[in-house]
Length: 212
Image 1 (cartoon, rainbow, N blue to C red):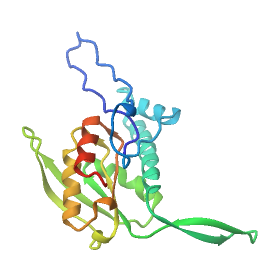
Image 2 (tube, rainbow, N blue to C red):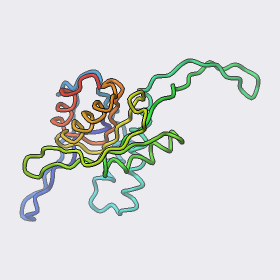
Image 3 (cartoon, helix red, strand yellow):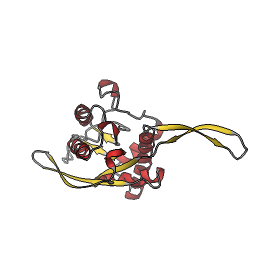
Image 4 (cartoon, helix red, strand yellow):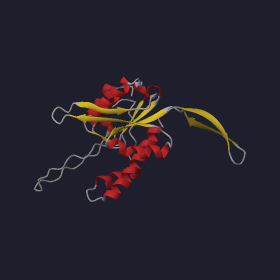
């Protein structure tokens, strides 16, 4: 699941050349599958992206507005979890028919960038447990290998919110999902929370794990 369009194209270091313009992303041009949820673009998200992409943005501003964007994506990710109906009594004595999310979810961040999303998840789910995966990619072959992985003992019975903000190839996420599946997590119980990704990365992940 992604909130936006493609990551910035790296601008040429040669000052004599014009910087590359980032083209608006049109999801209708691609078929990612019904399981992928793209948050509709609105003015709020557009402004957050503008500030985050601006090279003149200060570090403190970048962190503040990136955290806001992360919170939006986390909230949408939580909206994909299962729930049950329930009734509560309001302070005025009225009965309100509502819902409550089922217990049994956890977060897993792909170190290091995924750790930036942990606080956003904790802000929404106070006591949620969070595991970690450290994956390194070969600079030449881009092949991903697992360096470290630590999950809740019962991760196999939980729904996992996998956090990784930027995907360019999808290799790292694909490897992380493989590790989770090796630990008994069902593919359909893995929910990827992502801020920016290329169409290539999205296709790679959805092709490898169509029920995620």
